[in-house]
Length: 414
Image 1 (tube, rainbow, N blue to C red):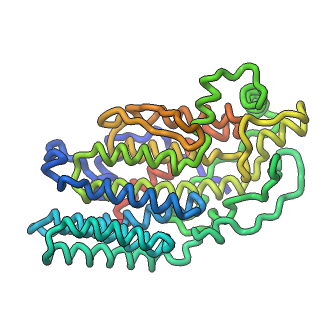
Image 2 (cartoon, helix red, strand yellow):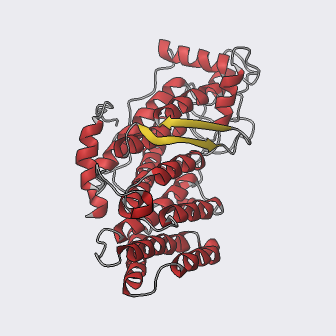
Image 3 (cartoon, helix red, strand yellow):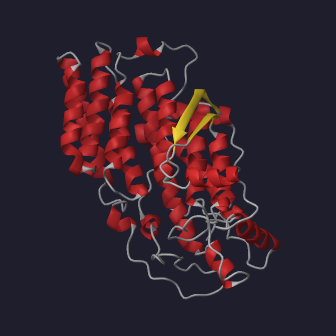
């Protein structure tokens, strides 16, 4: 059964004060500059890049990769909760690196040698002594505890993608889509254990529009006109936007979060918590997305259009193998926007530029988080992959789940 939606117009000041304080993420008004706060080598950024490289070689489902990010950076953040006063830099750098290293070594064991080499590089520049040893021990201890706590949480690849028998065909009911007609993917994520949600359906939205409703007819008309492979109304700019945002949300937003981390003047503990909370919120968002998709099993636009007005219609881009409602790209964007807006503000500190694996050579620059969400929303329509309603509902679901994670972040760091 669906639940009533809380208001999506969340007060940023309230969240920043109440929820970020609970998580230990209050942004102070006066901070030392990056050079004074951290060693010349930025250990947080160094291990962010190590994590990104490790995840990229893992060939894991997106939610499983998000879980690896969440556990490894949560281990680092927890190890940094109580930094000793003496030689804090040595402790912090060792704790952060060791926490991420220990978790990733267990979660992506095929990359163990590269991770060992990265840790050796970090530790070699930290003065030997009791504080470095304490930091290493704290990072390993927190990683071990979190790995044990999350064992069997249903986010391993086999559990995320169990065999899913296609439902009987019928109006509005999802069916495998051309050209590959792949069975439903990510159906198992809805049964996984969230980090902070009470249950997967906690914020499940109301059902999608009825097939005979004016809203649904408008949705389908828009996708047919603007999302077709041979569309005559979609502009080149719209095609480029659809292509840029076609790839994995995890990969696309890795550059976005990196920019936020690189620009932050905050201490190591705050920065580790930023990365951890971002991915904790995104794991829970992906669980909630799977729950809603497979609860309603709404067919994709390609199935609807081919079954009705235009049997020869094909979308600009191939349709992913899971139901339409809501859009996973947009739940991801909504959640990412909510975390970054709450913890940093609506703008980045400086403009940043990202690339896309689905549009090699293209770059896009931003100085606010909201335009990324807006582009994602349009892009999935222009790709012919989703209805606009699925996109809009996805954004709200992502923002709502992320807001819940931020309100309850104290449970991760208590």
